Image (cartoon, rainbow over all chains, first blue to last red):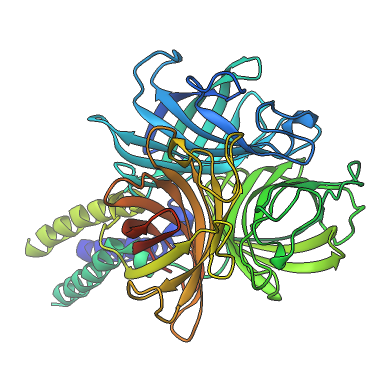
Length: 187
Length: 187
Length: 187
């Protein structure tokens, strides 16, 4: 009798399990990151006089713009390519642990906002591989979320969300972004 | 005896379950969207005379092009940045529910086709967050599928497919795209 | 007695199963690709004299660059749009099975490296649909991994990694990339 009741319990449990395994992509998502990291990257825009130190340059601009000064109208239309050092703290002169490489493109006339496509590229004893990002960066907001759309090497098949914070902004030449990366898919 | 047969049945069931849970990423995908939405967005390209109304501008062009007229050869090489209003219906003058921000770049000499990288950015009572898109847009086809590569806020970690349809095309200045978004990964 | 021991075993197994099904996105990932493909694509950059054969063109450049010659400093800042034929072997003159469409942007002063956003677009009896890619391409490395960020049609919702190899590099006008695509999410 006890055995029978136990069997019934097991069957019920199995039914529940079999339902939950039938739709794992819907029901078992967790919002606890499987990996969290914080990095800073540093952008020095070429302005015609700083070729040696510059880490980025304007390579596209609207009809009314040019390639050495970010245009008016909130830089609308300026396309900037960058290869910026990544550091573990907010010091530009700390030893870089990788490079942030890609582009941003200012896309709004009324306020500063940009669209980003870039990668963090690591090749050190600590990290090897890359993390790829894309998304909108309404940079007047204190924090902005973009997507981690993939990764390679140590970050094979990663997906997640990165939160950007402007950590410093000096004139129109230097800015520093804090990047809090939270991966929710790790392989 | 009955208990033994039941146990055998349970073991067989368990074996099956353990196989199916071992490869959930292969076997349990469903092509039923977990979320479907339809939006329209409206693009008015700067042509040198419409600075006030324009929502996009040419910021890159091939050697034979310029920044105020889309070039010949099916606009091959023109890079356009946009910040377009998103509406729920096909009326340019409806209240925008968000902004479509990013770029497209015409990439073929023989026919009109483009590559898109952009985001839908929402900040209303109805939706907060962003949906990020990338993909090829062979815009002479009636419908074109691109990828939803990620999302933030209400669209946290979203993935899916968006189907674009040219809903209107007026001269070389205005077009309107209907966007049917189907998400297949929702968190 | 035997039945009781069996029941205990089943309960232990069930506990284990229920733990593993609770976090399938963490524990059941496999690094065996669900689909592998090899393609070649061929890029002929417009240099002012080869308009008929060219499959790509410079459409953005830094202040010191121009649109017909890739700039010095490892082409830093050159943005190139392409519509390249895809072939199954390494012969430029083989029948194309699709088109590689998108852009690359050289993003480093010290060595050749680029950021890629592009799609493979297929419309043949063999393949219909598109595969979308993004990532960093440090092109002096023998192999480079980028992300498959999505797909449509036959490649609906695909994710994976593509390994690029420079298969030929002739002067500054022609190069050929071998692309080994490994998908790890197939629907």
